[in-house]
Image (cartoon, rainbow, N blue to C red; front, side, top):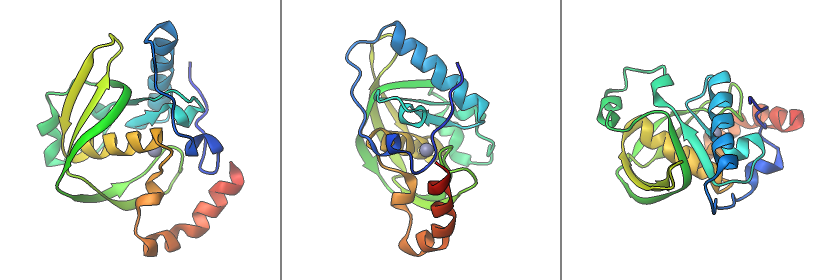
Length: 178
Ligand code: ZN
C-alpha cells in the first residue's frame, strides 16, 4: 500500500527508530509498503520514519537512479536491487565524496553534502539473514542518507552553514506546510 510521505517539520523524522526484533509478515508488509511508496514518488531510497513508522528499516533501489553517468555505479553491481535493510548499521567508512543530495521529505530541495566514499553496512534481510555490504559512490551515499534517517538525522543537518543560510527560506516554508 502506498503511504503519504511526511515532510520536514514532522516529528517522526526526528525520532530514533526502534530495532526490529522479529522479522514476520508485518515486517514484509512494511517492506512492500516502503518499496511501493518509494517507486510512486520516484525516489531511490526511503526510510520507515518517512511514512511515520518507527521500525529500523529502509529500502533502496539504485536501478531507479537517473544518473547512470556516475562511473562508480557499476562498482556496486554485485549488490542486488531492490535492497530491504532491517536494522542496518554502518561499521566502517573510508574516504570522502561531495555530491548533490535530495530527500523525498524535502520536495524540491537539493544541496551538496559531504559523505564517506566507501561504507561497510551490516543489516538483516527479510529472510532474517545477517548481510554485510560494501558500497561506494551513489549507493554509499544513499546508504548513509537512509541510515541517518533511522537515527533521526536529516541531510540538511550535514550541509555547510553558508548553504543552510541560502536554503533557510525554503526550509521554513516546508516546516509550515508539514
Ligand atoms: Zn531522505
